[in-house]
Image (cartoon, rainbow, N blue to C red; front, side, top):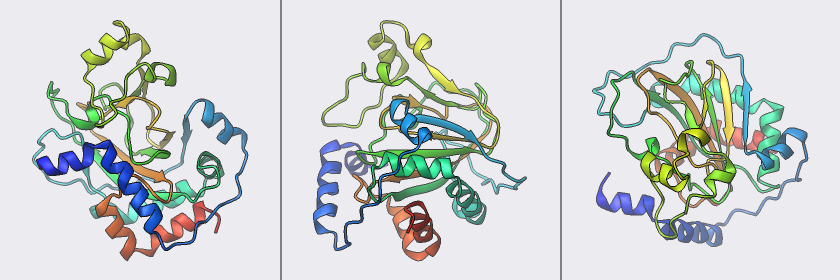
Length: 267
């Protein structure tokens, strides 16, 4: 990523300003949905992570023939778009997931911010960890939810979703200007040498779907030596801090995503 691109992506103030500009310049009518209450959704506010399982068929994922440069993952959505749509449709049909989305956003319109198929090839262990492999929060929006459907079994060597609980996440200072990236030593120091004790890892079977508020949990992942494939769907308010340009272009030319949002929002 270029220096300008890095500044644009990492500067918090710029994201806040962009959200306000989109809000006040929008010509779309404001839509308020009926706020729903559900036992699963209500519990999500207390512990913003939910794990469930889906029955997914045997599918063949088209993996790219690439030279691995050790970036955390490669988005292979384009060559697997039809499979991804089938899986997203299955996720969006789940009443428990719909209840969480509608309740979490408190009646505001739920926007599909991004869908990606993230492929982390088997690789030798590397000490050069970068970006999402470092400890961080996500800043797509003030409110955001990630749905992660694992298409491979995930164990300790597959780069499991790794996080601190809400209490320990709040002990880590947030930078007022820049989106944070912390290495293990920094977090271990903040937690008085207790990083290993307070670290949680979600190891799971293929077909597990994780619903998480990645703006609350300090987390990292994709530190893998085994292959890992995960379908990731991100949801925000209708006016996120940052638009995902590639996905925005995809939405404009594919009715599937508009239909997905209408279904989630009960239109």
